[in-house]
Length: 363
Image 1 (tube, rainbow, N blue to C red):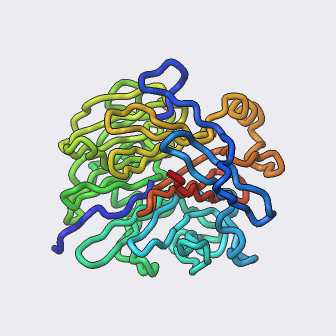
Image 2: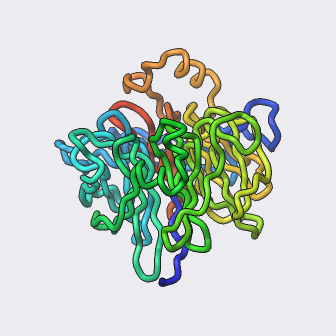
Image 3: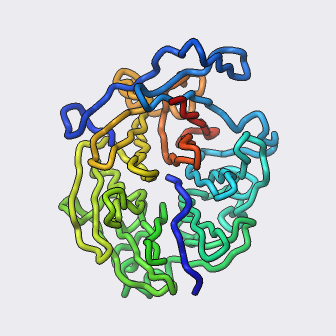
């Protein structure tokens, strides 16, 4: 089998008083040198502070999205390939994935395999295997299947509930729930599938697509999960580990590559997913903000942090459906986020009609 490399980024913000060097980072003034304008002719907001400032381009994709292409109820996942193409999963039509180039030009729709009338796109991750890149998809639907495909949308294999249940010795039959959310990759060629909305287990497979073990299961103690919504490889200290966004438990958990629990970091609000670039870890929080941690897991910036805005959004559950209430430089429900090769960030939100923002690094 050709060598497998993790090459694609995809995808805390801690509560007040939690560990880490919290930095307030709501919208700040636009630097005079920027002169950035949006399509309405007004300046784009700047989010972050210090060495972590970004020009915020909300609806970065909208100008070139065909009029008959809709995100439906949500834009869910985002990934970037080696050529800089951006892949966004959704719950609309057509397909379940929209693809754009780095300038925001629409390239194609794909992912019909996860569309049965209305798309069920959710988790998306990309990995280079040998000389080719492959997409791993996790649909938000119990009747659909974890799928590997080429960048052109050709299916390589699929694993549904029946296959996962058989491989794991009946875990899903016992749990009576299955609804996968996200995938992540091991440095040895293996991979993980998180059944975040279903059984609360993470399934591990090796590089030969053979089942290895399950991690977690439902619970609140260390090593257990309540909605393991996303995961990623954390090797910022030189030692590869799996880090899981244990969303409903409001925490991150780390495991070694043998599946042993290493540590838990609490204080999060509702962490949805994870991405790593260099020494930085990116954590989109479904409750209105995106946080970045350094290699020591100190918070270096919180993008869009605004307590009053968060209280307003959480008090009115319908805010996700009311784009007239959305504010520049603030987020409603960040569901996934990832770095690109330049260190810019793409954010997709769980809101009606979907929302894609590009955060362009300034310093």
